[in-house]
Image (cartoon, rainbow, N blue to C red; front, top):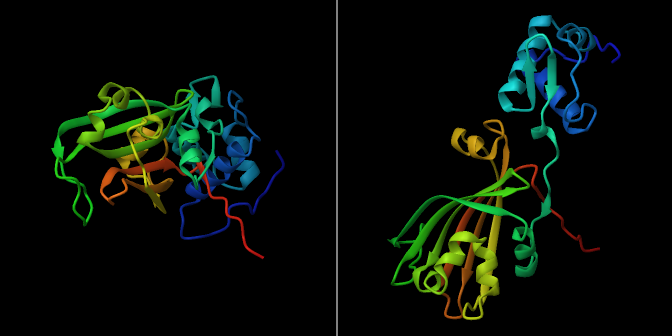
Length: 242
């Protein structure tokens, strides 16, 4: 690693935070792959033109995020958490949406089968909704966090399957479910402490917040979901018209 005495310019942001960003980018870019030892604190300090204490603070920040692990007397290593997670394009069709959920493993975090109203400024179905909060994993790593509502009449068609599989897949595959309208909106957010804990990312990390609504032919909502994806798990692809 060559020296960069001016790599960390003066700014209102603490130097160790800026250095942590630089290290995070190098890890994300594959310069230091999972399992590799980082240079020593002194080598990092020399390379980035900072004090050794600043280098230590930056490394400790990344250890707290789970990107690095430190073993006394053995050095600091990049963890498996630094491996790039699978990314999926924001789906533009129901079939594409279903495909993104086929290899995800859901875990129920909370569930309420007593009828609940929708958290929307519009009337829902008279019999109410079953509520579930779920964490979806991909190859053992957190992928997205979902709070969802299923119309009770729809949930009653196959409650076990709704509990064990991705709800979107069950809705798409069941012959008695007629989805006439499907809409989703995407906003960019940041992870709260709770969300960061579930998704194993740093607090205030970027997230993709998706609100998804399925309706039957008469306009009644049969499925409503608020989904929080890791920011590195979603990509937006848009064809631009000439």
